[in-house]
Image 1 (cartoon, rainbow, N blue to C red):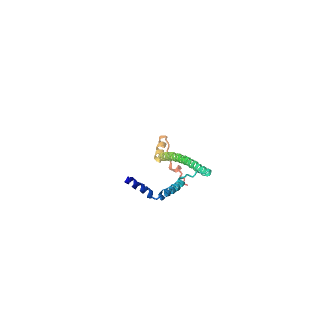
Image 2 (image 1 turned 30 degrees about the vertical axis):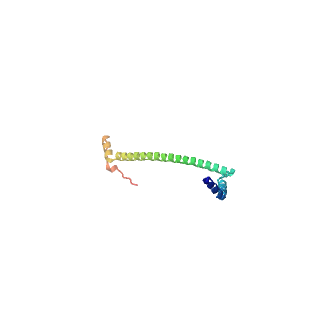
Image 3 (image 1 turned 120 degrees about the vertical axis):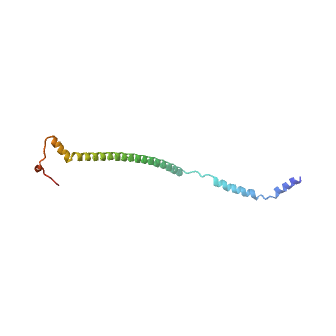
Length: 125
């Protein structure tokens, strides 16, 4: 019994200031934790920002796709240009071979033609 009496006296002697402080802190925390509802303009603004972000994302994807297609076309045209340049080079070489004077003299002899130097005229630009 002595122990229970000691416990009772401890409970009586403790000040009750602590629970009041705890209650006031809990009220402050409860007030700070309350959510403030969004207004209509804030909701509309958030939706508009979301839609704008979505549209910008789609536009970016479209631009990247167009860019990739354009690069592919440039590569195709570069390949065609290189092919044509090679063909032109081959044709120039063939023209040079066909215009060779020894070849022309050989063809003339095959057709019983002769070259007279007095009938040759040189023209220069």
